[in-house]
Image (tube, rainbow, N blue to C red; front, side, top):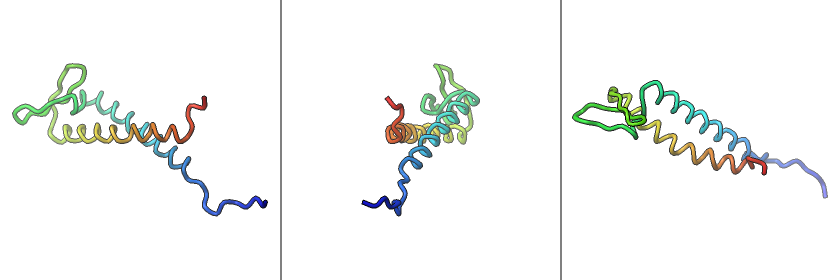
Length: 96
């Protein structure tokens, strides 16, 4: 049997590594922004047109734009974290 190079290289590990780092960067950015602005929209609420971000039982009033940004950033974390976990499984981490 001849050892011929595969004409189509396996891209799975490369893509999995990219997805892992994308998910990691997204959650770090989320935590940094939440600390800076005072919480996140999923823990906050809207009262009479006033927008509040919540963190540990405290609420910070913010603009509608920041509230919507926070809402969609949390939603993106909810998507990227399971994908990052699947990427870890695909990469075979941890090795045990």
